[in-house]
Length: 281
Image 1: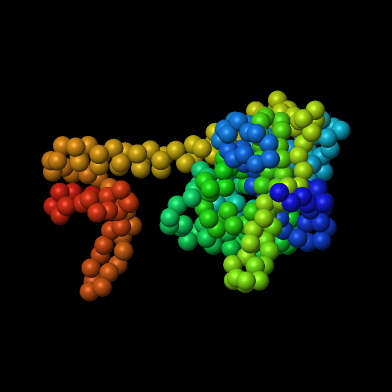
Image 2: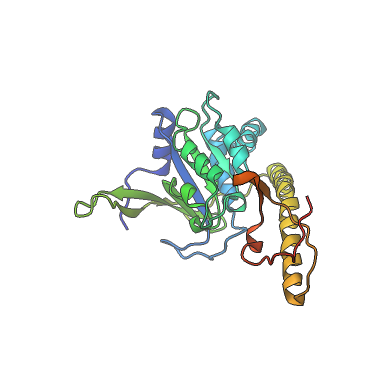
């Protein structure tokens, strides 16, 4: 495992002062140099992301993360969904040291078919050097998030257990025998000393984050419940084998010869029988 001579702090300083853009993913579910608990949730990924953002926005370890004015800056550059992330990258905004996209897998998960909107956002992030120096993702594992976002990551910080982490850099090298297929290395950068773990958030900040995250999740909850209801209806319909009326929703698409089609949810595709389902719209 090759070792990088520069620290993460050096790379961040260069990104801020020399107009670079770097993307960091903070994960916890994969073991690298140190043994991990292999836990996807609850090890402090967001805590570390927020404390790193606190330092990048003018805070200091010596103030024990107690400066509420700095925390207000951190709050303003946190997103929980692709749209909010896009707002933070609006062209012409004052350049921010960093932005945070928390729980990326919740709103931009890995899938065989990546939505065009997510692809567009990934392409846009790659050009946002003037508006942002560092993008920080939090997710259990890079394989959990959409491929276009995954490919943007330069550094991975793996939280092996609460308070401890190690930093690695993704480096690409030209393969002269196959010049169109670059070789990738996972280069060790540094790790936090075991006797100097990163701390928990201050109580007032933990309370803010818990409230913020609950509000963000509540925005996603209705659509999840609608999809679950549709899925449950379909399962019940399949088990009875009877003709039932299901209420489903989908996008209306104008077709040739004046015809109109409805794009139904994926779970229905290939399973609908003509005359067995009534679409109410």
